Image 1: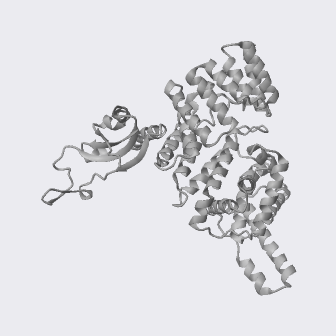
Image 2 (image 1 turned 90 degrees about the horizontal axis):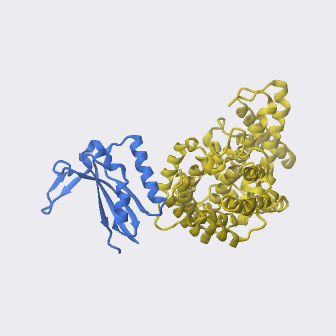
Image 3 (image 1 turned 180 degrees about the vertical axis):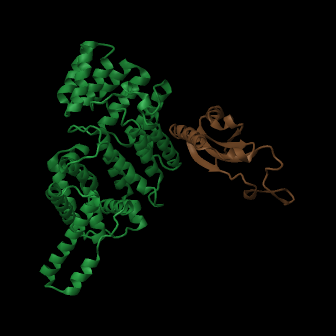
Length: 112
Length: 411
């Protein structure tokens, strides 16, 4: 079995204030992964406000959150355990984030 | 629900609801070293209600009335005890009188008392079977018969177990003091098991006529939720147990028709499943995520999750996979039968019959019930034959009723 991180991206801060129904939909999606014994880490949600992020460039210049320059920002992550990357992608496709124009990156974790 | 108007209607309900809670509150606030005493005072209080209420009428707040009476009875007890044993010393009597119950017995007082009581009873000096028996009796207000049925044994065994457990607690100077974190962790397994059995008793109750004792199920969920409020007890397995109970509870209403008869899963109206309960279950299922440990509750919660889905092939493949795991962690004939059912769903009826027959549980009604079910579409005579055997072994009217209906439908 391999482990994959699903990295969620949203377009703007407004999308990250989900309605209770949207939150429940996301929770139901997470539960369906847990019920297949494929949820390794239920992950975290990253705060979307300007004050909550800093970007440090190679020359160590610190700027406020990444939101001004980037079209998308990382909104959260989880880790799943599947046979292969295709299975992880199939799981990711069920996430309701696509309904609000978000996207998901699937990345295999290096086994320590 | 209609409000009961007579004492005779009101008291049994209040008793079931309050007796265990009152015993716990009494033990907690007076540090009674003898549980029996707390139980006696609680019983006396209800006896008094049954004598007084028919004459004076039902008080406006029956619950407050009962707690006030109990409180006075405890005061009286200490007074008598002090007078009797200590030969009248004003200051001692006064001191004891000051240890009264808080004026306001709110939900929080009751909850904390019950939880403290639960942990106190799950003391390692008592064998685990004794702990569970005692907790079900004192904390959940079960009769000896109900405890025996919940633990699949007989009344005599339970009586002895409870007697020994109480003696052990008394000899061990039982006190409801605050337990340390390490003591809480050590006792958590027994506490979860007790809550699990309480829930099962409510969900599968096979005796008397109140088939699904919803309040017991809700009581179990309530106790488990209390555990999530404390860091030491808010563990993945606690959350898994809550998820399991929420998923199962979502079908409590759909499982019973308007006459109180059981409706089998396949005949249930999906619209009557409680989707809020399923949502709650999903929340706790996610909270239960843990890379280190897959407990029995995680597996059972996963099975219960798939049962909240309408039938499809992958559903049964998951269920079978989880039963394969469960049977290795904790074998029981019931688990083996459930696994055989899932096996039939995945590999077909004939393979399922073969798998079931390997178990050869010829003393269990459910074994023949399952065979009867599997033979339905293959061989009518075999189906009737198995259902008849199941009927003869069935212990409850409810279960007999289920088999009788199946036989009638086949003829």
